[in-house]
Image (cartoon, rainbow, N blue to C red; front, side, top):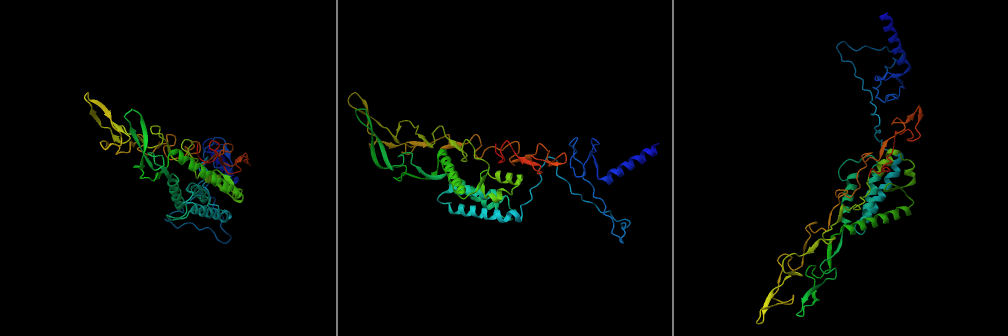
Length: 399
């Protein structure tokens, strides 16, 4: 009886192997030969060992020599269920279309570096997004690394500009507070402003609000130029319709997630306005008896010893040792920068990463569970690709 059962099991296994049917080791349900996971319990199926090839006529299969190790088979393992397959580089069918677009964006960026750094930043970001569709170029200083270096330089240069002197408000003329004997105060000219030496300001770090406006204006100018060329927008990048029509879902996610969205609170600057100094970077000197940078000296006159305050430009007044005559000191809250790190993005200037797709912009198709087929038919939602754009972030990887 046991012998009959054993023979039946062996016969059934041989029939299943001959028909190419696979049996799930967890639940015992038959699955298709090309399936990677069981359609019943969603357990991962072991890889199928390749069948031995039949020997050619006239060439009998020779057995290995005694003592020689048997040849080891290396079957190709399938990706884990729910994991998007690695992206294969587009190759020649997109190479000749993407390369000219990357080179054009880099030319525009180099031409606008000095005069319009915020627009040049957008062109560098556009080149970085399209560069992800090309095979990686080895070596530092070429390809993606060179573009990333240009982005870092333009981020710094876009936030620098002409900063008016906070003392004279950009006029270059100094003012001096005069104390009259009748008790009324008045402002009088003093020649050149001692803080800026009559220049009215200097090149420095823009305030957080001005830097945010500069980034916003640069993005609008970049959009206007690319739309005028007839290009279509994908995330924050622009490309030709010929390239857009040939992209897969994963390639679209690569382009869209190359440059995250700017932070809503700081607008790519990574800084917010300092509430203590309101962006000026300086505060009024808190030294005792300091008025407009000079220490007031009291003199006693008359028989009754009446205290009379003299004029502020009197030689008897010395410069304040704390503010050195400027009347203002650096803000302790922002250390004179006029801004503090953004609390929402932590100072990096980008929106938070999407938690559902981990910043990749693509997730596993919920209908076919990453297989690409539903009941033996192609999945209509992912078109046999197994992944779709993340609906939470729209594909750009930002929350």
